[in-house]
Length: 126
Image (cartoon, rainbow, N blue to C red; front, side, top):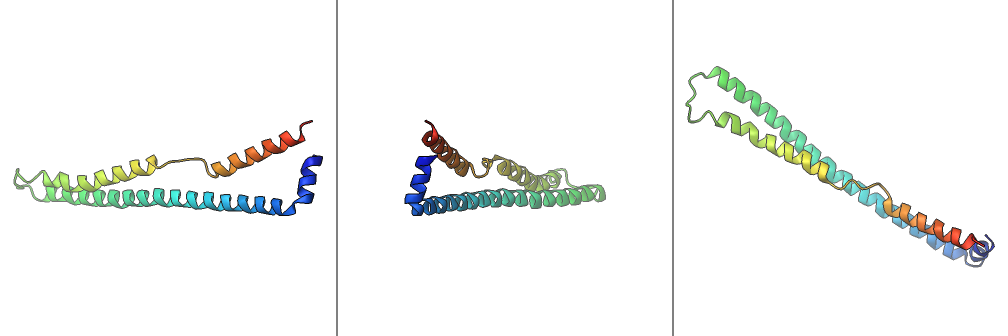
C-alpha cells in the first residue's frame, strides 16, 4: 500500500486525471446505452403501429367479406394481402428490435475497473 500512497501523494493531479478519464468513459458508455435503447424502442414503436394497422385492416377485410357476399373471386385475395403487408412489417420490426445487440451496460467501464484493481493488487503484493 505504501507505493500507492507515495504515488498519490507525489502526483495528486494523476488521480484527478484518472477520475476524469473514468467520468469520460462512463459518459461514453451512457450515450452508447441510450442510443441502443432509442434504436430498440424505435423499432418496437414501428412494430406496434404496423401491428395495429394490420389488426384494423384485417378487421375491415373481415367486415367487407361478411357484408359483401358477391365479391369477385379474382379480387378476394386483396382482402388478405392488404392487412398482411403491415403485419409483415410488424414482425420484421419485432425481430429487428430483438436482434439489436444486447450487451451488458457499462462493460468497458467494468473492464477498465477490473484492470485497475488488478494493477493495484499487483502493486500491493509483496
